[in-house]
Length: 282
Image (cartoon, rainbow, N blue to C red; front, top):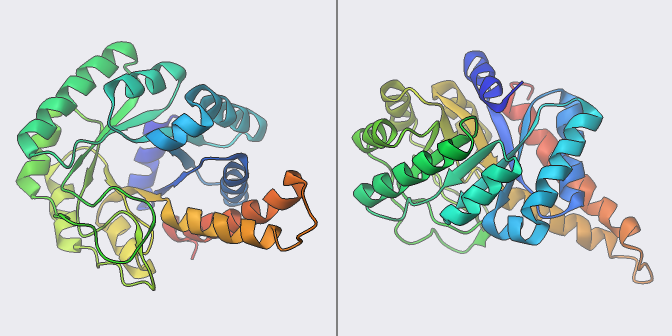
């Protein structure tokens, strides 16, 4: 499947495609293994920082190789890119989708800047999917002591106008979700009525960002209400770190290939559980 076809499949089946970020081969292997065992499509994401660390071309080759070797539906997304230059680089390199993030700006400016990105990127590669975001949910994928400042949910009319005027293929509305995960749990509940209202008023698929820390029940309800893709990053980072710490328990061990499997296994376990949930298997 193409990513567009996979998203349409998810919407029709009332499922969601899991999107998980990587910055090393251990996380990549864990995600691919989990999706392969469940035989479900998956999206690998790299933020601007992660893409700079991994290298955009290397990320494309990693996903391409995994797709060819496994025969799985694995896609690559440029997650929360704010630079048009970097978005162009990702599109030219072969990313399946890109997210232009101007959500912190006033809606008028968000629309104008996003429209410029859509026009430019579609000239380069008409088939690449472009996503935008409306409302503000914070910017950091880490464990938080408190909610990010300035968090605000979207207005349905703003999302509708944004989609109509920019020409984005996907939209991520702020519906009570936040980036990052509150220490000890307790992330805000999602506004299901708002998700339903947005889904009724826009034609493009909806994406849920800031999935770490959201309850299973909220995930299930959100997917039924119209969410087609769910982003998870902080949970993966926490799992990765825990796996690395376990791998480093042997103070005498210095071989990376003997340490990294702990991180891979931890990411695999976290991703497997989320993919089961998003695909109605849990």
